[in-house]
Each structure stands twice: as structure tokens, then as C-alpha cells.
Length: 150
Image (tube, rainbow, N blue to C red):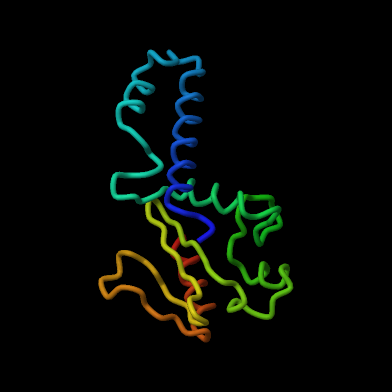
């Protein structure tokens, strides 16, 4: 894999350091503020002990792999957002030509990706494990997730 757990952990720690540096430089007490002390004591907000990474870590890692992309509304962002316009903008015939998607809402993210020519919903909250998603239903699934706020 291009992105290893070690690489993601390194990004998580870099983001934690940037967050603390920003908090230390604010005009509300800096390193002596209650917020700074609490944030420093709570540990990482970007990776937990089980190895779950925040969406910020994933976006940073993927952005390092990508050059310049835009979302479906033509505004600059670190990652494209799924819209039918994105498919046309990228010169693709349909949604099945995209190899994978990150779906994010609140503190939960999951991937829908193509493995051996077939798409799977890899949401860790699904008790049955990875769920196959047919090429036919992929566009509908992505539209549904977008409507749900992902």
C-alpha cells in the first residue's frame, strides 16, 4: 500500500503538533490556558489507541498523493466531493470508473472501494462485514450517502 499505518500515524502526530502550536500562540493564555493544558493532557485527537485515524489524517495523506483537484462545485479543496458533475468534469463515463470513496460524517468515516473489480462497502459498523455493492447500485448508494450528510 502507498499509505501505511506508520505513515498515517506520522501525519496524525504532525497534525497534533500543529494544533498545539496554534493553541500555544493564541492570545487567550497560550500554553498556560486551560484549553491548551487540557488538549495536551488528552493526547492525540487524530489517532486513538486502537489505530483509528481522524478524517483530517486521511484527507492530508490523500492530498499528499494528489496534485490539484476540485469538488463538484468547482471550489478548491484537498479532495473531490462526489457529485454527478465530478464524473463529467473528470471525463469519466460513470461513477464505476472511480476506484474508491471516503464517506465521512461527524466522527465516523468509511470507505467504499473497488477490490478485484467489485465494489465493497467497508463500513466497520456493519455487523456482517464488507458488503458488496453492485456497479448498478453504486451511483444510487453514493447519492443516498450524500443525502444522509456524508
